[in-house]
Image 1 (cartoon, rainbow, N blue to C red):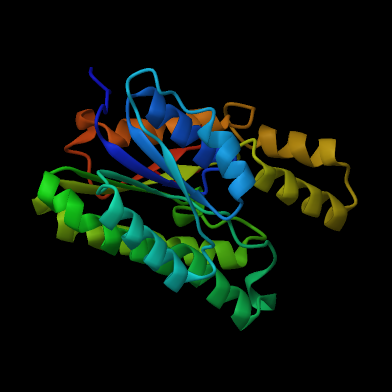
Image 2 (image 1 turned 90 degrees about the horizontal axis):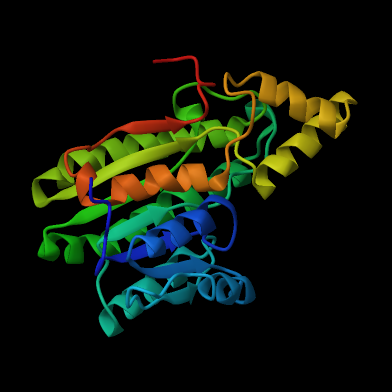
Length: 262
């Protein structure tokens, strides 16, 4: 099976750490030209230096804040006009703060909706024209297993992730005729800074130690461990490849078997 994506241009969001960084590295390893985007320029430069260039790839970065959708649109459209269109889009950004949904403020919902759905939509609108012209498009949204089974204590996240999943499925139905697929990768508990924050918050609320909370979370997974960001990146890379051309409109849990639904 040929997973190479040489000469394909990929835009990877939230790519300075965790799953986004791992995805950018893996796509570059498979031959893609990668454009990183996040809000911290220093971290973007550091990741850029790690990307493989042995196959003639050319990589760039765009500094953008997903709390400012108008600025994001301007920067992405300006980059495309000056440089190149994209064949692959990986929508990925940090999750909302935890807490019961009943206690969430309207501002928390609005902030999460902007960061996750509005910005995803802006990016899709910016890149689809080039994908249609190329007859090749891969839109991959990194969401959460909560779209299949809501997670306790992540009220805002559960709500917004579900909205993104339904938006994505609708897009898949509309864009499939153009050779563009739209799929969602649903990470389970993954060893990232986000998971560390969740564990710390849970330990503080329950009075348990960080190790106790961590072990309980691992024991809830049939694999009895957390995922590595690279394992999520592998699923993203496969969906970005030609080999996944007839996979469209699906949710792919990468969670070690934790999610109890089919």
